Image (cartoon, rainbow, N blue to C red):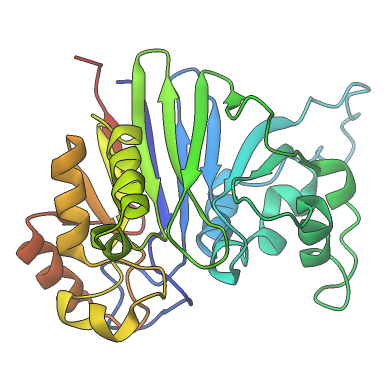
Length: 293
């Protein structure tokens, strides 16, 4: 086994809890990558991040009457990469228990190409008037600019980015380990723009196929049905059929449809996946990446 991928949120645009979304979940985008050496990398901080934090638990406290250690344990490390700054990808950050407790050292990067600095944006999410002051956030969270070399190195993992077709300067990510690609992650990406008959669109499509070549697992935006695409041109999302065509073109071993529409019922998500010959990402599901071949 090379890595495990845990989906903590697969919904798009807005959280959608309720009886019609229980099978695929109502939390927004959040995916955890765990390497065999224990490296933990989180992709996006949607509302699913709160459940991930709860699963990590809080640090143990000393039993009353037992002397506390004079050397507190070093905080565990977590890497967090945002594809962009839309609310459904950042809402969970302010309710991420390791950040609130100071139990983990969290290192954050944002992969978009916005000229607006990342750190003031992130700090604003954790400050009044949105929230009461969070004292631990100052020491628990380190915000980094994207490296000049273009790749984030985190433990045994490497994070590459390329621009998505999505309003708001979103990115598509590819996660590699020492053996090659592990995961392609494109939660917000409009593939329909790539079929326009112009050289720029064709070049972008060719670059995307090359970027995602032979990924063992691809999570891709499948917000719309084919019939809905014409109504939402330019909104920055794709259909299940388009995601399946991309997976075929880049040689992805497995496709998970992602960023389910908040109004999409479980049975509709299943029908879209069945018609596309793909799987739908399911909140709470864990996927294993096998040895490189």
